[in-house]
Image 1 (cartoon, helix red, strand yellow):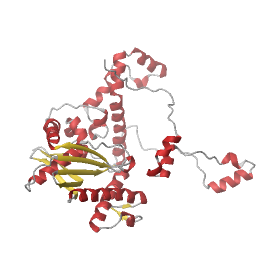
Image 2 (cartoon, one colour; image 1 turned 180 degrees about the horizontal axis):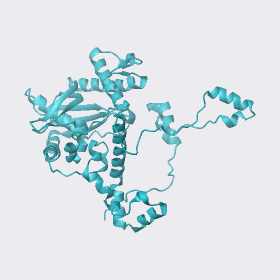
Image 3 (spheres, one colour; image 1 turned 180 degrees about the vertical axis):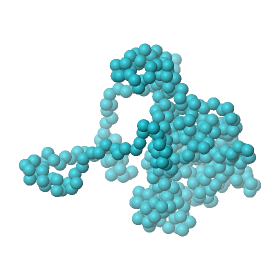
Image 4 (spheres, helix red, strand yellow; image 1 turned 135 degrees about the horizontal axis):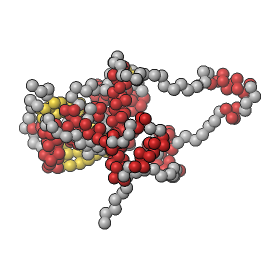
Amino acid sequence: MEQKIILRPSAASRWIACPASVKLSVGIPEQPSGEAAQIGTAIHALAELCFKAKSSPADYVGKEVEGITMSATNAEYAQLHLDEIKRVRDELGHVRVEQYVTIVDTDEVKLGGTADVVGLGSGKLIVSDLKSGKGWVDADSAQLKIYALGAIRSAAKNGIPPPGQIELRIVQPHHGDVRSHSMTYKELWDWYQNTLRPAIVQVTVDDAQPNPSDGACQYCPAKVVCPAQRKGFEVLAAKPDLRTLDKEQIQAVMVSLSVEQIADLLERAPVVEKFIDAVRDHAVQRIRNGESIHGWQMVPKRATRKWTNEDAALQALTDAGLDKSKLVLTEMVTPAVAEKLLGKDKKAMVDELTTKESTGLTLGRAVEIAQ
C-alpha cells in the first residue's frame, strides 16, 4: 500500500502549480529549518502565550521561547500579531489562535494545517496569518484560502452555515500595515472547485508531468530529481563538453545558437539556476552526513583580513605617521537604513529627500503592448 500523501497549506502555491512535485519529493530528506524559520515559530508561540496569559511580549525580551532568546524586535513582531488577534476578537466576538483545520482526509491524501488566527461570527470569517520574513506575501494566497475552507468545514460540523463574507489578512512587519483581501463564499468555493480540487486529484496521479516555473520550483525539494529541470540543459547537451572548452571556444558555441534557442535558454534560466543551487545544497547535506562525493569536499571559505583590535591598530598606524582622517571613513547611511531609524510615522519624509536613479541597463523580459 502506498504511503498516504500529506499536503501542506504553506506549500500550496507550489503543488497547485505543479502537482507532480508532491510524489517526486517523496523520500527526499527535508532541509532542517533555518534560524529565520525558528525565530518565526518562537514569535508565534510568544504571541499565543501572551494572549492566553494576558501578558505583554515586551516582558519576554531576553528570555527563551521555543529555544530562541527573544530580542526587542521579536517582541515587537509578537505584539503586532497579538494586536491582530485582539482586533479579530473585538470585531467578531470570537477568535481561535493556532487552530488546526483539515480540508481533505482520505485513504490517499490529507490536506490540513494550522491557521494562526481564525474569527467567525455575524456572517463573516476572518483568517489572519503572521509572516515574520522579508519576502512579500499576498493576502490573496492559496494558503489562507485553504485555512478559510478548513474553518468553514469545521464550523459546519457544529451546524454553523458558511459565512457570506470572508476576509484574508497578512500581518507582515517588514512591509507595513496589515494587508487584506475580501471575497464571498461563492468566490472561495469556485476557487476550490476550479483550482484546489483538481490539483489535489492530480497529486495522486502516478504519471503526472512536472510543470516547472520560477515560483513553483523555488522551494521544491524535488529539484534535484525532477526530469523537467534537466530539460534546461538539452540545447547545450548536443554541443561539445563545455568543461573541455576554453573561453573563446565557449563563445563560439554561444554564437552558434539560434535566437529561438537563446530565448528558450533564457526562459529556463531561473529554473535551471535554482536546480544548480539545489544540487549544491544537497551535496553539502550529503557530505555533512558523512557521505563522499568524488572530487568534492567541504573547504574553508576565502579568508579575509580584519583588525585584531581596531583601537590598537588605529593608534599604531597614526604613530607610524598616517593621518587619522585617511584611516577612519564616514559616509551617509542608505535611505533604507534612515527609514528604519525614523520609524513608521516619519518614513514618508525619506521619499521627499531621495530620487531613484538606474545604474544602467540589464536583460529583462520584453513588455508586450496590446494592439
